[in-house]
Amino acid sequence: MKKFFFLTALVWMWVGYTQPERYNDRIYYIPPARAERMEGPQFLMFKTPMEGRHVLLTPGGRLAISREGDLYLYTPRMDRGKQVHFGPREITLLTADPQGRFVVAGEALRDDHRYRLWKVDLRDGGKELLIELDAAHFPGIAPTPDTKRRFYGTPDEEDFLWSYYVNRDFTGACIWQDTLFVWFPPSSGLMYGRIYGIPLAKPQVLTIKDRVGRVLGCDHGGLVFTETGPQAVYTSNYVVIRRDGREERYTPPVLGEYDFYRNGTLFVNRHSGFEIVPLGADKGRRVDFPGLWGVVVEVSPSGNRVFAVWDEEDTGVFGVYDRKRDRWWTLMKPFNDREPQISVTPGGEAFAFAYQKLYNVYLGYLPDDTKPRVGVQAPDTTDVPRVTLRLLARDRAFVSGIREAEVDGKVLAPGDTLQVKLKPGENIIRFSATDRAGNKAEGVKKILLKSPQESPGKH
Image (cartoon, rainbow, N blue to C red):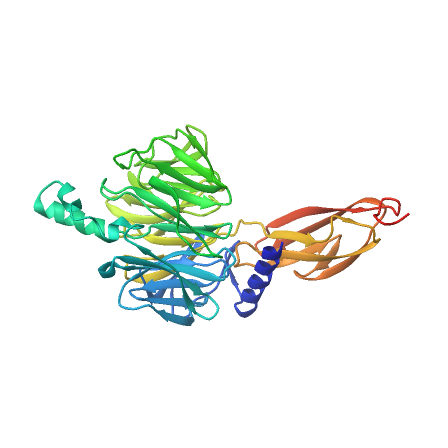
């Protein structure tokens, strides 16, 4: 509940200094300064003058961009807030704190055979060294002398594989239950993947899982990943779901290198389309790409929007599949980046990507279909006939904002309080919140008013 209240305050503070505007029926957006506007029937996109290799949209509406050895923090209007300097080495943006307080960045010190994980405060840009890993934790930083002898092929092929091997980075991270999880996959069939857990309160490196193929996703349901055999190959026999230290396994449909887990569902690439497979099922629903060939490159955390790149008449296209409407929307054509680095808000209403690695950063907005989150702060049981309720509400899309909210039939703003008179026994308090896009969330709170005979210490 405390986290929920903090998020409510954070989002309302953000909306306070950045007023969203409306485009079309359900699209709310923040117009960036000095940007080229691109419109479509169901999307709005901006080509910004900013450049970067990695982008990250944070829960509080900030945009973090890494470029070489610097990290830049922007407001949604693309006004630069802070520049955080690390040094000459390139840094990697890995994940954001779910409460919008900080981001985690990785820095590979390859000459020293070390890897650093940093926390960067989103409010003041302050950086803090979270932990430093050495070659024992990250084999790709300091391979053993005989490793290169295991590469096969022509000299050029061996040199390419060797360069790829020793320049591996963590490919993903998430924060779950106050623990940072980071991982890297097998490389060229020679190195096993591994997942580490790092408690944020007392940082230390904990090996969560060895011989990992790929981490498919991480959310409130736990970590979902594939396992490898003794030779550490991409093909995996099982999908593993890890929750609270326990693991569940099942045999999945055939998986590849570019598959995702989001919100209880697997998204499996199939060359000319992809499958939507509920976790634990052996088959699902197929969706074809608009072109003959394509690949899914990102899926929103809620699973409602699937971003992909495909070929259409020998031209690359970047677009998104909307599961609710069962439709593809073309966002950019031609598109000449097969693996764009994308960051998406939980409901997929806003996204950002760095086009062609070190070129312009794009911001995009899609229809807002996400219901707000709403609740009331009140006791479950009381012996006092009058109680004070506090309304907690926030728009999870963070763009459109709360339009109206009610508790017990009375209109309130998020954070407002209301005194309610209770009758003996069970009382049902109804509440709701609606965002500017028209999405409405409702709930009930049950409060038990005890009689004097039931109250402890009273006779």
